[in-house]
Image (cartoon, rainbow, N blue to C red; front, side, top):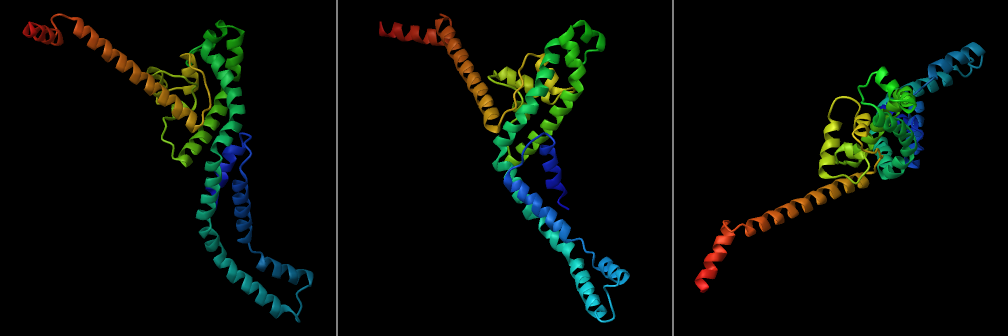
Length: 266
C-alpha cells in the first residue's frame, strides 16, 4: 500500500532532494494509516494471560475488547486502501507545484556527473576501448575511471526528470531537458535523434560538441521555440533570395510579364 508515492519519494531523496512539505505530510499520513491497519489484539490478550493481567474478574471484558478490535481490524485495510488515491493526488500535486525547485536541487548532482561525462565526450567516443582512452591522455583516463558512477547518477536523474514531466503533462521532447541552448533546428534534430538511438545519450551528445544542462520545462520549451523561430527566419530569407533571383532573370515569368507591360505602355 502507498508503494507509488514511497517509490517516487525515494527516487528524489536518493538524489539529495528535500521534498516539499505537501509530500512529506502525505508520506507521514500514509505511514500513520499503514500503522493503524496493524492490530495486536489477539497477541495482547494472550500476553495478558501469560503475565497474569487477565484474570477471571476481567476476562470477559478483555475478550470483548479483543473481539471488537479484531472486527474493526478486518475492515481497516479496506478503509486504508480507499485513502490511497487521495494521498497520491496530494503527493503528486506537491511534486508538480514545486517542479522547478526540485530541478534546481537536482542540478548539483547533475552538474557533477555531467562534468565527467563532458570530459569523456570531448576526449573519446562512447564505444571507445581502454587503449583508445589511455592514448587520449590523463584527463580521458580519469573520466573513464569515473564514467560508470556518473552514468548511474544521470540515469537516476533522468528517471526523476521523467517523473516531473509526466506529472506536469509536459510533451516537450525529453532530449531538450538535458542540452544547453541556444540550438539551431538542425541541433534540435540531432539531439532528438540521439535520444532515441542506441548507447549513452549524454556521452554521445557531448562527443558531438553539445553542452549538458538540466532544464526546467519552460527553459526546454524556450530552446525549442528559439530554434523554430530561427528556422522560420532562415526559410523566409531563402524564399526572398529566390524571388530576387527569379526577378533578376530576364527569362523568368515575372521579367517577361514586366517587359510585356512596359511594351504595351509604349
